[in-house]
Length: 395
Image 1 (spheres, rainbow, N blue to C red):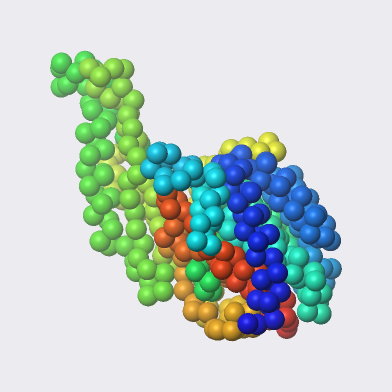
Image 2: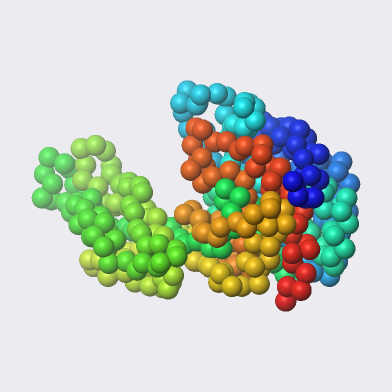
């Protein structure tokens, strides 16, 4: 057992209980207040140099006072539970069974949050291994609704001049170095309402939309593909229309698109590709996000989240792999996420070197079997604690 795993093992029971505690606090996007307060209270109990909630509502803790600033990020919000009867257990119980914690957010992303908070304690006990580093543990808000919005605010306003970011999104204890970007778009067609008994007197907006939906499906065949990130995709995820009644011709129809962007695909390109499918009178737009956080803070943004990758030979990837060897006694594999993360802001928009390492697996996220092994919590504590020494010399 490595020295880092040995140090982390001392907190096995505490970190598992802390994860169970924060699972028991439902925290949908914009509703993370109780979790944020609980996280800050835990940080203070563990002896952090400082711990506070920033104006946007993110929970922020600091260990150390070195020149190099490192951020460990995990989001506090979760998706909903859907149909509670589909769960094999109460999604907000934080059930511990066979050394696995179950419940909404266990994998995405409260397991990593719990591990990062307790890593702060181990970091402090070890004096950050003498490294000239300040480690900031950040529980971000609203990631499920608008990935990157909160972390972008943190990195520009709350903690500027950060040298590197490590995301806690689930990686099954490997090192991830990027993912596809995404956009949310809306397409609108218009028509003329009339009584449905005489449809020829009107102009059906839904009929105008039908060939667009089929053309969007076909567009997938022509989208770019990348050997590391995979293929760009587009999907119609919702359709709605405005009609005076069920016996009236709709005069407006809208569809919503989820566009995943691979390497080389830009915001402008994705918009142009959809625009080229539209007949006169139809329009496409990028959706905007302007929901208030749990503190009432509003930061309006377009729902465009850029693609990002970090080269395999980047010094941060090298350091991340070295931390894995030091902490776990093995060299982690490198890969990428299928879903999107807060890295869209740290790496995609701000250009800050970013990698990911976290407990649990993507396959459990947003499912009724949402789970995180306690062994993964301990391993993640060890990994995060090994980062300062591994990061020495990172330019």
